[in-house]
Image (cartoon, rainbow, N blue to C red; front, side):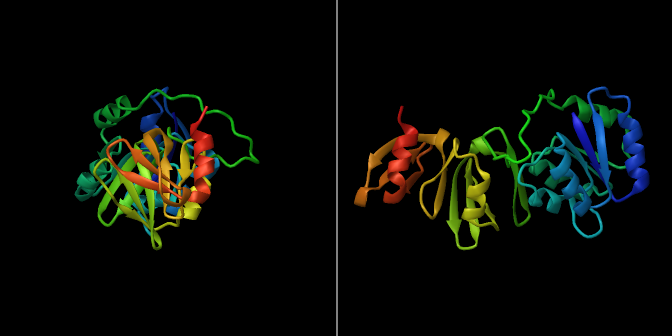
Length: 239
């Protein structure tokens, strides 16, 4: 797995880099000393894995994850064990307390999935987010890594979007139009000005008022498809 180390302490980066040299399944492709550096490197290099410090000058590791559209696998590395509970709540692969012990690092590496080759995407084509990707969602003090395959609905609410997954409804500060541009249209459909639905969650469709449609999703949620979008939706869902 292609990994990026993000830590404001040079010696901490060097120590971790040295420890990782013995692992043939890890390739260190870069180091970043702060969130802004890391953000540029993630977008440029597309790492599979981040070794991410939490408390750094300027912005925190959590803020970096909020900035990313597509989030790699994450192993947190920090000297502050008060963050341990939050790190596990966001479903990171693991949490390593500094100074990092070799046996704990070995445990973390053993949790890594097998790396898979990424399809090459033309530089002129912006990669869209599909069901296989995961995103970082933060609402107040609560944080989650969520696979897009588990998100059934995005609902606009003013300057925020309500994200529906499992029994959660966190709010993120983003516009539905901006999100719509980043999602793969083969997996997600703009049902109306207020909703984007995950097509893999569609259970049934029925006619609705004024030429629109009512879509029932697995789990019971209902979303209205506007008359303007209804014809397009029927075309997409038909053979």
